[in-house]
Picture 1 (cartoon, rainbow, N blue to C red):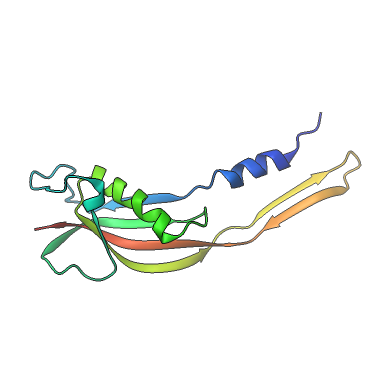
Picture 2 (picture 1 turned 180 degrees about the vertical axis):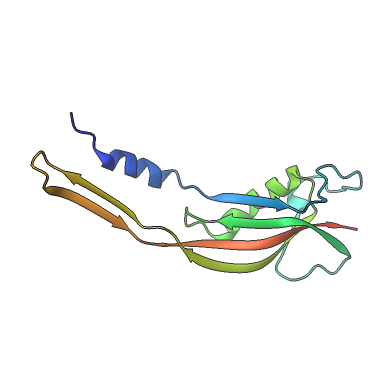
Amino acid sequence: MRFKFYGFLCICFVWGCSSVDFIPEPDFRPNDHRYKVQTWQEVEILRERPKKLFKIVGEIIIRNTEDLTWEEYEPRLKKDMFQRKIDGVWMTEKNQTMIDNVSVQTMDQRGRTTNSYLQQSNLPYWKGYAFRYK
């Protein structure tokens, strides 16, 4: 019985592993009695420093392995921040990082390589600061 890696490999690529990571500040409180946002659409995503007084409550890191555009990611981020009772996110950086290579080889019964696959790629990511207005 041979185990074929192709099916497993295809499943891994179809289910992209994009993530929105929230790294809270030490004094972050999940509940804020002053939170006034009513729906997730009201959460602000800014590309420049907010005009009002604000307090940074954590860092946001978005890793994009699904090759989605920012317009496709924005609703996900807003919903996640609404659940955490955060007023907005100030996006500060867009970059790429090199991810580890993936190498898969299959061999026949004699030990000869029958198929091989090597993936090398960059992982785009966005960074920003989650904030609450004072």
